[in-house]
Length: 177
Ligand SMILES: [Zn+2]
Ligand SMILES: [Zn+2]
Image (cartoon, rainbow, N blue to C red):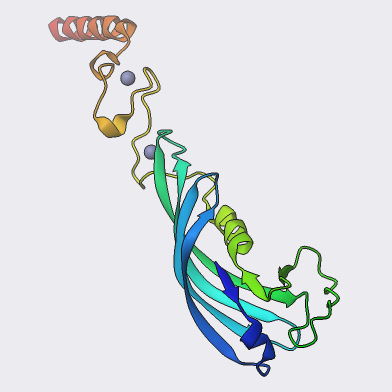
């Protein structure tokens, strides 16, 4: 996720370079494989990184609570400001924007932090392991994606079956009238 941009910093404004990136980024505690393409463009004050990256993170299904791998697509667009002049080696003042991304003194542009931030935003609020996740049985907690649990046949409250008998009895009485 680290790209040396010293040559591009010397290039003219508007010059573009494309990079295939692939590497492991720590997003939610574990390492996630990130792959994709990034286009770097030299601007008058920075390098603009734009690209589409793909990764997967382990998340917990909000319905059945099982861990699953959730694929994420990250559309990244960030400006990276040089901290050191590529020709003179002098330190450069940073722009006013707080929390802007920077290119280090070795002219390395590191995409890791942007990828981490975009990935965290891309994780759904209520992840589902699959669209039709059956969830857990409210009675015994069994994961219904793995088939029905033993409570299903006993689901009818015995009091209801008593009422059913009464209803049947009254119907029979009506029939005899
Ligand atoms: Zn689920
Ligand atoms: Zn159950």
